[in-house]
Length: 246
Image (tube, rainbow, N blue to C red; front, side):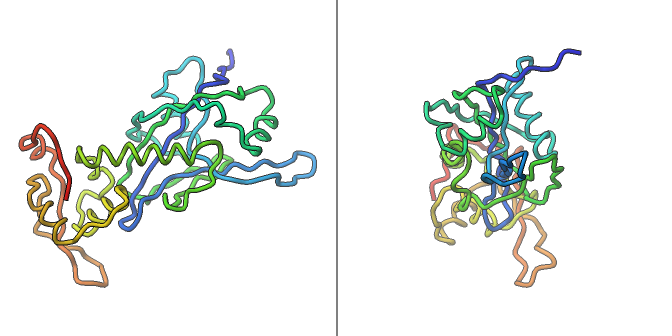
């Protein structure tokens, strides 16, 4: 059987975001360069969930495979958001050392396609395969390998626009959520603070945010009312342009 051949200059990077009811998080994978003869650690840093594609697969299939290979997670809703091809994106000394360590497997000029995925929880089970994957707060995801700081930045920029104009924020919330959770999520993504009263007034005008006859259970504070997002109501009542300005 012929071995599959990797594309030396085309890769996929996935910005997988999850919300833990308090803050926005991203999955990062460790990258450690160890000298084979002495076991000395040359450097250790973090990357997004990404790798090169095979010659015989399309981009969407590659993204799904790479996520599964590095994290064990399957069937994530992955969507393209940007492409990255700056001339200097692999010029950091650590990246050059990594390419040298890999030999001639990869090109020193790589174009990557960015994907994002939104998860309603960070309570997922990773399957580690040599490189450890874990959740990190987006606010502390700095100094990443390659140009992955910029990739995360562009993903958040893309999501901010969509959050203003599409109800995709509910993909990051549990099926049943409180208005406080919803406000914290929108503040985390949009990088701003909302007045509580104005925010709730805006939400009260959204027929698709349906109040339930249920409250939180097992919480130390006064239980808050639960809500859910109704896609059916949204489709029936949606206007030509969704607008979330509070």
